[in-house]
Image (cartoon, rainbow, N blue to C red):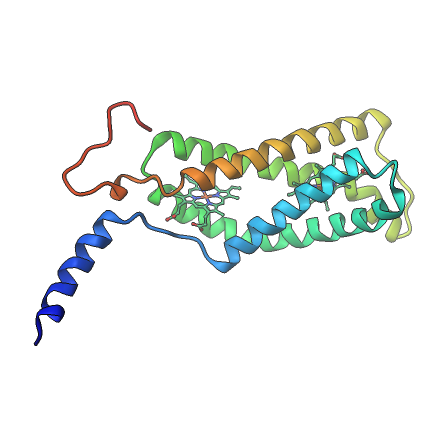
Length: 178
Ligand code: HEM
Ligand code: HEM
């Protein structure tokens, strides 16, 4: 056995203790990218579609289809994430923000689906609309909760590797750090 094969496992095991757990998968990256596309297309619908309706119409259809597919793809991932996330979360404030993010996502999806209900009923042959005030409220909530969810997700991803295990052995995180 040469010198290299004796030292490598030692170096690797101490390296593993000091490296943060990277987490993530192609699936979670795809969900994050789809969420970003939904946010961008939604912001286009809110601010530019009225003056550029030729592009607004296909973007609305893509947003609606994308929203339904995103909801279907997110649900099983989120169930397993919520089972493993709290166990891996080492900081109380990170955990709290995680739950807030979850509530935020559920509200964005719920308001989106409620706004799409009249269109879905129309496809089934029924004509029905929300009252004007209800549509206004749903639009308002969907817009601002989407923006909050975007910022919350950026925060969640930015802080997620900030674990105590990332510190070299023997060092302590300064007092008061979350
Ligand atoms: C809608 C709600 C949430 C979304 C969209 C979300 C999204 C993500 C994504 C995309 C990642 C990186 C990929 C991964 O590690 O799988 C991540 C990591 C993480 N999330 Fe969440 N998350 C949510 C809720 C939560 C909740 C409620 C918790 C519980 C505290 C949590 C705890 C964690 C932890 C601990 C990691 C780091 C995993 C690691 O790197 O080992 N998340 N989250
Ligand atoms: C989860 C990620 C989503 C994000 C970030 C997002 C974002 C947005 C934003 C910013 C708007 C423009 C503001 C507004 O009109 O309220 C919008 C509009 C809309 N979204 Fe979403 N959305 C998401 C999911 C969904 C889902 C799941 C549906 C339902 C299938 C949906 C349906 C709609 C509808 C019907 C509109 C109104 C379009 C209009 O009449 O101008 N969204 N979305």
